[in-house]
Structure formats: C-alpha cells, structure tokens
Length: 230
Image 1 (cartoon, helix red, strand yellow):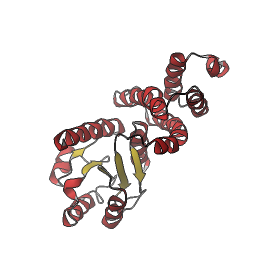
Image 2: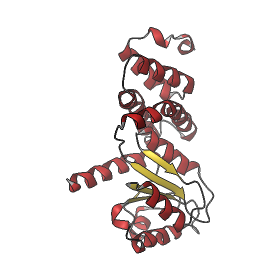
Image 3: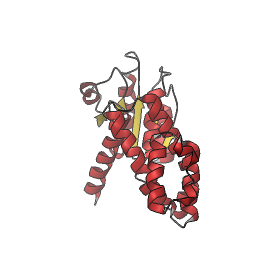
Image 4: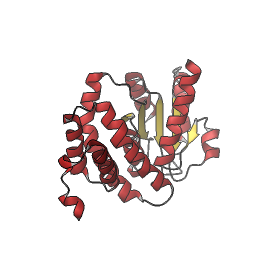
C-alpha cells in the first residue's frame, strides 16, 4: 500500500489532518499515534488535535456505520486507533483543563455478560470527545449508583442483550429516583431486544439502537439540558 510509504512528517498540517482522518477510518493505530505526536510537536493544542483530526474522523466512521457502509469489525478497528490517539491526548487535556463534551458511566446490567455492543458505544463516545467510565458487565443498581456519585456524569448508559435482564434497567432507574439522582442524569439504554416503547415504559430518556445513534443522541440531549440550564 502506498499509505505505508507515506512520510507523515513531510505533510503540511492541513494535509496531515486529512490523512489522519483517513488513517482513523482505516483503523491504523500506529499512524494515528505518529500523526498526533507530529501535530503536538508543531504546537497544535491537544484540544485542537482532538477536535480537528480525531473527532471529525470518528464522526465519518459513525455515519458510515449507521448507514451500513462500515460494519462492527471495521468500527472496532477505528475505535482502537482513536483510543491510541486519546491515550496521548487525555493526560494533556486534563492538564490544560479543556472542557470535554460530557461524561458518561456505562455498563451492562446485572445478570448479563454481553459487552461487545456496550464497548463499541463506549469507544465511539470516547471518540466523540466524552469522558467514559466503563463499568463492564453484570452491574447491579449499587454499582451504577456508586459510580454516579463518584464521577458525577451527565449520562448513564445501560446495556442488555437478554430479554431476562432487560427489566433490571427499571430497577436501576427506580434506585436513581430513590437516591434523588434521577433528575441529574440522562439515561440512555440499548441492546438487541430493546426498543423505544420499552425505554419509554421504564422512563429512560432515550433508546439507542447502535453506537452511532448513541453518540448523536447523547450530544443532542446534553445540548438541550445545558441550554435549559443557562
């Protein structure tokens, strides 16, 4: 491949940004790391590297995944490349105090050990500029509550792949109400057996059918909430 012989150092900054978006789409983690370091070395701020090269690249990945052009394996590769870039940027962003789009606690509910879809959502959210606290699988209400109290996120994401574990989402939402936390957090739910009617029934804020929709929905609901808070 010609891309393998491409010297990223030789590219002007706008060309390098465009190339990084392509490399991200192709899941080329080493090139993303190299490009990120080059841009930082040229004096670009960590926030600008994130918002001009990486997030727009993941936006394209998300749109093509939603439209059926890309599939889960390709998206996981792109997300892995994004993660490699974020590993460099995250500590630098923390130092500069740059505001992130938002933060999210996410996990699969109690009794359910499926996590591919949930991890994909977590990586796509991180790729969009969110701080993501991934609790893993088999989370009871207490796990979610403790994470919310500790991290104070704007979003809670719950996933279930089994019809038998779906009802536990309602248990978690009731626990949020009991703790006086429900009004402070946006609850997104997803997983193969779920639908919008179920999300409405358990009083979640939204059902997200896939990772791309989760990112779009999260951005939209956070924007609405912040505009109301002003």
